[in-house]
Image: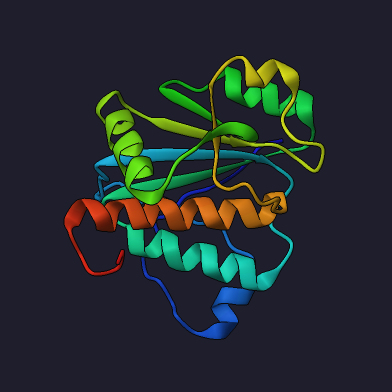
Length: 172
């Protein structure tokens, strides 16, 4: 089973009650984002505050970037999900290339020019060895984060990259 969530939040209800209830988020047919990013990861987000923060950044990214979250059960399932993806593939790993926010923006927008962008986050044991050779290894930090926290940091960095690209004051 694959769990998919996209960032289209048509008819968004900002009440706290609606944030805390599980729901399916569906992409309306009349909206078209310029860019598409998939984040493939093991396990679901368990903490409510992480879900709220992810939804906030995904809402901010709309309508320019769609974020698709794909959850896997285990390493084998993660490999299957990755094998079906097209576009650029970045595997988040501590041994990967560390980039700052400006470099990440350049990398992201160069990837957007080639189509869809896919980021893979490993589970508690990290990425499967087979995946490390399939995509470009990228590190968000020298620090160690939970895979749940890494999702949030990645989505925030995608948002930050769009703001750097627009020249807003968000990134100082």
